[in-house]
Structures are given as structure tokens and as C-alpha cells.
Length: 119
Image (cartoon, rainbow, N blue to C red; front, side, top):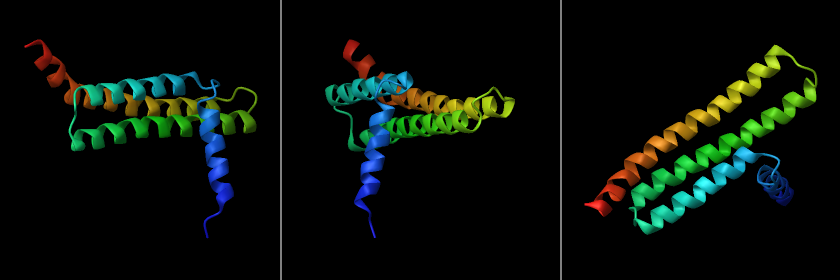
């Protein structure tokens, strides 16, 4: 059975992500807003919206997972440990990979539309 408290805790986590304690999440959120404005302006297709939304949700989701991993690592290993560093680096790398893929996809979707404005 669905527990309404689960939604409360999930929204608490989302609020923490965008509270300002995670500056990269704010950068990603600003990118999402920019892409949504561009998508509206350039009237991208339903399929293009689908791909763009999947991309930015993947980046935001991985940013949340990265932040959760950082919290847990800091909890269990408050002092420096090379494995703690590796865990944090790998989580950050996952966000970077998703962001790079999203940039490539955004270029595929938006560059032809931008170029056609100048031709």
C-alpha cells in the first residue's frame, strides 16, 4: 500500500537538493529552465521534448544520487579515506557523463533550429 509519508520524505529530499547546499543542482536546474524556454521558442516536436526531458531528468536524478552518496560517505567516513574519495569521484563522474550526453543531444536537437534562424 502506498504510504503518503513516502511522498513527504521524497519532497524533503528534492527541497534539500535545490536548497542551495548543492550548487551544481542549481546550475542543472537553470539549464533545465533554459532548455525548456528554448524548446518552447523553437517549437520542438513531441519526440524531441521526450528526449530532452529524459536527458535533463537523468542529469537531475543523478545529481540527487550523487548528493545522497556524498552524505552517506561523509557520515561513515568523516576523515579522509581513499575509498571514500573514489566513491564521491565516481558518483560525480556519473553526473558528468549524463550532462555531456545531454549537451550532445541538445546540440542535435537545437543547432539545426538555431542555424535555420540565421539562414
